[in-house]
Image (cartoon, rainbow, N blue to C red):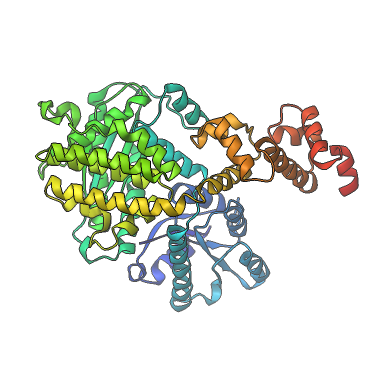
Length: 533
């Protein structure tokens, strides 16, 4: 499924585009319309469409400025199709430099030309998706770091409150709420057996996106991908009236379930864990949600932990949480020996309890979730390990006894060890590359070693040594170098005073900025401006 946004300030043009072709034939879903570029930009940030059809001239922000803004922010998607008139044709040529897929003259627009442009844009979207899935680079954008943060939160991987609080502050994630709850969601569809792996991925991605958009209209939340069949929702509650929130959450999930079924023939099942007063207890709520998932039936597809009367049978004899930090460390360092020790211990526990199928399945699901979320390119790595299975790694959920689960874990263990032996050689260099990328993307903020180390979940000393080993200059020198490069551009492109540039780049004072500038360039800011402006 391709999501598309139409941006044009003329309602008749919007309606004309909508009615010009059969969008279902191209597997395109129109997510909405915008009457100006600024509104379109907000919708792009909120809904992440794959394609945008936009008029080149609109109030507030033009289509050209919209494409330029997205290009400047290095957004791979959306792909833009520009609508123009004859007199604006020169501007359309400029749009090509912003990665625009095509430009169409309004007066010559026909169903055939529109369809041809869309097919070209769809091909670009599919290539970008494929490149993103196959890329071996370690993601380091702020959004990916936030997802990793939430993964550590629901997996109880924060060692102390201060570590959690520091990372939340650095990532600008607020937990200023009275209470919290986590949900465990499973989606299924009768269409899956006849879909390609790419179509299944699109179905899951679209379901996840629609869930996030709809649920957030009822209650503040964060939707977190787990695997290709499950995801989590963290609910942020403004008060501790649990009974009142139960109705809100149940209604929201019901609305989402109906929309998913109407749009994609997807069914949804949800279990909601205990309501907790502290964010560090969200992991407990999430574990509760997973434990009661077996209570879901055809007559009750949404269940709440506090409504389950008999909880004695929910105790899990396989306490995987004690392995989580060891797994995280082994995955971070691609350590095959540590990985083998962990998996051997877990498998031995399963062998000692051959009758505890449900709990073994839940524990193996935890291991799968950690593999997908903590490993760089986890989805790609785990999928390749189970590529010979008809349903890939999701075959775990088709197993019927503990012996089969053990065999599945052994396949995962052997595959990961093989992958680790390849990745171990260059993972440290990739860490430095992505730390540098993070610095480049946040050069206007106040950056220091402790803050960046917290975000990447390393000790400051380890990151400093690693950075110096795999880079020409040290950590602090690199930050200063990038800030001064940014300052040079600001001096050239913007009419700013020295103290304004200093403030904009997060320096403590204009005096300190001048000292750093002279150390890097050999000139004071004023002398540099005299020579180059």
